[in-house]
Image (cartoon, rainbow, N blue to C red):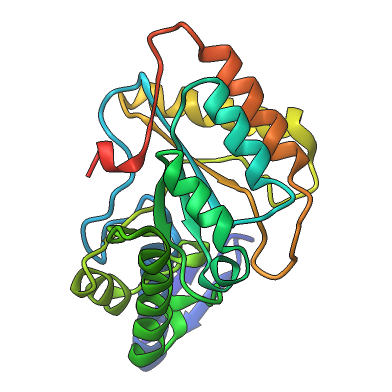
Length: 256
C-alpha cells in the first residue's frame, strides 16, 4: 500500500513502496557523498587516517606558510621571524623551489621546517596514483637536494586527500599535515581581517585545549611574486603580541 509523507509545507505526499525505497537510496547516496567530501576536504577529518593537526598545549602556535617560496614575501618573513627568534613551517611548491633555490636554502639555514606541497599544486584527491607519487616524490627530491635533509611532512594542496594520498605520502616517509586555524589570507582582505580570523581560530582551539596550527601563505600556486603584504603584517602583529609571554611558536614537528 502507499506510504504517507508530510512535506514541510504541510501538504501530503503519497509514494509507493518502490518509490520510498528509491528515496531512501537517494538519501543514503547523498549521505555517503557528504561523508566522503568531509573526509577529503575538512582539515580536521581523520576518516582517511591519522593526520597531524595540532598539539594539546594551547600555549603553542605553529605559523605555517604554503605556496612559496616567493621573493616578494619570503625574505621579509625570514627577517621578521629572525627578529623575534621564532621558527615557522613552510610547505613548498616544487616548481617554485626550482625557480628560487636560494630562498629554499635560506629558509633551511635559518632553522625553519620545510614541508612538501607537491610540484604543481594539483588537487591530489582527484589524481591517479602515479600522479600523486610523481607530485610528492618530485617535490621532496628538489627540497632534499637543496638542503641535504629528508622531508618528513606533507600538506596536500587545498587540504584535499584520499586514502591513496596519505598512503603514498607515508611510503615516501612523510606525515600528512592539516591545520585548525585559517587566516584566509589568499583573499584580498588585509591584515586586520586576517588577524580577526586567526584570533577567532585561536579562541576556538583554546576552548578545545589544543594548540594553534595557523594556515597562511607566503606565495601563490600560479602567481609568481604574489603580494602577501597582509600576511606579512599579520605575522608581525602576532610575533609582537606574544613576545615575552608564555605562548611559544613551534614548528609542526613538535607535534609529530
